[in-house]
Image 1 (tube, rainbow, N blue to C red):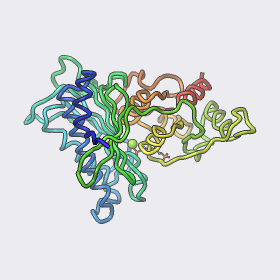
Image 2 (cartoon, rainbow, N blue to C red):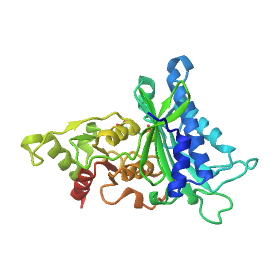
Image 3 (cartoon, rainbow, N blue to C red):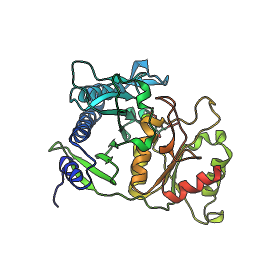
Image 4 (cartoon, rainbow, N blue to C red):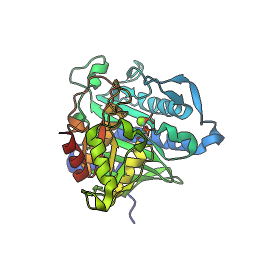
Length: 332
Ligand code: AHM
Ligand code: MG
């Protein structure tokens, strides 16, 4: 089999579609290199003294794991000096991180969830990194939070890495979804999936069912119907999976279909869902749509949402198109 590296793919895609100028290619390569470093740290586990929590909380008021902080630092340091960025924003940082004055600035904005699936870090279950790339608004001099508040349709690239039995990187720049597997001996990303397509129909769903008593009626109805199986209105049995790492759940859906849901629920009226629009929902929705799937907040397409704040949360329904459309219809 002919091996296609990440670099070769990015150059060839630029030749074909003109969507990856050199600066964006550099950005994707720097992020993917940082993901290798994170993968290495994750793989060391207890031996690297990277497990457990820090003394600090993040902006969401959540306890930070050591690896959350390490991964955040790796991404910041890797991306500061290349000249490809104007600023960064992270799920783990309250405010944006402009590129320091000692470095040249570029035209892109990078957002990331440095280590998604925090509850799985210490128990050796798959976790990952999610990233999203926007263009800085024309004429921006000093970046502010407002410059990041662009709808998901404006993303020029998005991707995620999964640190699981294999380390994989999934990216889109708006011309389909490509998958790369980390060749650990060579230290290189090798293409292992091209133009991934999510089946439109599925018999598998993912939701944290322990929250069932807090769900809103459309979600309860939808899940009840799935669980009724062959004897219910759907006339077929459905299987359930919940990894509690969005990256791992989405990666399964990319490979064999399925629907992933993190709805808003009645637990905390101040929190419309758990997942964050800018670091999780938008990049994953871009990828899922590029793979032929759909992504909504129950009412509208996630990529059309106009962000109000950097850390805002949204309900998420994404994956196989026909199921996402059905549960979205139940909200109408
Ligand atoms: P995190 O970014 O703090 O890790 O939280 C996001 C994660 C998702 O990866 C996952 O789908 C969800 O939280 C799991 O939540 P829960 O523990 O409520 O099932
Ligand atoms: Mg996360």
